Amino acid sequence: MPSIHRPSGHYRADDDRLRDLGYIPKLSRRMGPFGNAAISFSVISVLTGCMTMYGYGLGAGGPSVMIWGWVAVGGMVMFVGAALAEVTSAYPTSGALFFMADRLGGKRWGWYTGWLNLLGLLGGIASIDYGCAQFTGALLNLQFGFVPTPASTLWIFLAVLVLHAVLNLFGVRLVATLNKISVWWHISGVVLIVGALAIIPSHHQSARFVFAGFVNSTGWSSNLYVVAIGLLVAQYTFSGYDASAHLSEETTNAAVSAPRGIMRAIAGSWAAGLVLLVGLSFAIQDYAGTQSTDTGVPPAQIFIDAVGMAGAKALLLVVICAQLFCGNAETAACSRMVFAFARDGALPGQHIWTRTENASHTPRAAVWLSVGVAALLALPALYSPVAFGAVVAINVIGITPAYAIPIYLRIRHKSRFTPGPWNLGRWGVPVGIIAVVWVAIVTVLFCLPQSRPQSGELMTVDTFNYAPVALAVSLAIAAFWWRISGRHYQVPASAADSEMARIQEDVV
Image 1 (cartoon, rainbow, N blue to C red):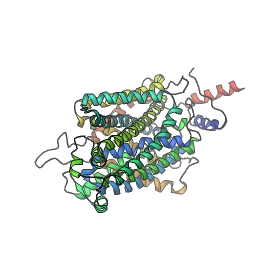
Image 2: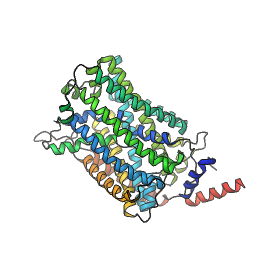
Image 3: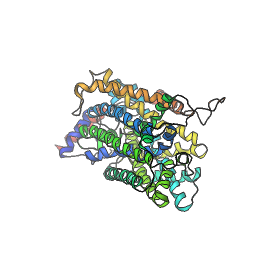
Image 4: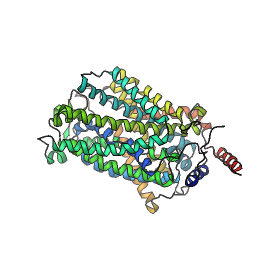
């Protein structure tokens, strides 16, 4: 029989609640409230998302759209986060979104939500760690003259994946410690970067340009359309805060700590990201040169122009370390999703991915599966950056709708919903409606063409938006596997009851 972690004292109430929800406690509760908030803050990672998407934002509206878009999107994400946090408080499990959808809407709702969430998390590991490899290649280029190629970047990417797998094998205590460090690294990093960009350069852009200037390099003539697609800079960054829910079974007082973790992570990222975007935009020395930089990383060119080569290398290192923290947190969240989905019979090899018979009570096989699939997702980058972009689009287009499904079901079947200790009271339904409408809007935005073909041309492989294809493929995979294995997908409440009885007998 698998080894069962048997907590005592104040942990017992958490595990009793988990048994009430139908699961045998198998993971170790060694994460506190701050650690839970830290993992979502690390996954959101403004030093990853903002830096990665800044080049896109320079052409899709410019700094003013990025900054005011950040303010607007952050406000709407607070609604989504609050609605999701309320449902998380009622169902604090590693399965998170798919378990909520299953309980509120039924098996099929849970199944499709789970596949969207899982594929999004896997795409998240691939996009975060590959972005880290690209920034690392840029740093090596500045320091040693290393010329990154698709093959060499892939090797760096694989090394980052292995690093994250090994770190996660040591258990949630190390993960929690690294996430706590990550919070302070991100905050200090933003302060350092913005401080250097504010003090060192002798020239800065005007406030009018930063807060009101508009730049359109997309080829589309409609300014409103460009503003709409420019919101993706912020929305891309504001994802991954479901990590707090996925680590619920390893968090103390999870019904309160996990929802608070979601809210604190979003609020902290909202503030830090705004400071970072403003600082970067004021420090631009050559707008066109930044857009067409030989480094391939526009923020790196801002650093070079503003603080010099030595300073740029130091600031790039700060960003790379933040990306490493981000990828490590995403690996932790994804592996718990693999563990939870397999536990309910939704993945083949159920007994492999749910094993936790080790000193750290960590689903080690689930960790290796997570990084292994992420490695496969990156293989198209050897042949086409566009093809790889299509694959990692699964990250956003999978996770974003998955957030809305349990919120929608909570509104639709509110009589089935029993609020947890963290709840919105009478504001639950209005906040949920706003959240669902916003997710529907941004899902459409992610599917819109972002670059217009030249006059007389049809849509090309370089201007086509592959996000709708990624969404369709994700749903097709879910539908295919439902026909094969959907009948095995269920919450094992009877197994939990049996284990509870066995534990009680042992105590007696």
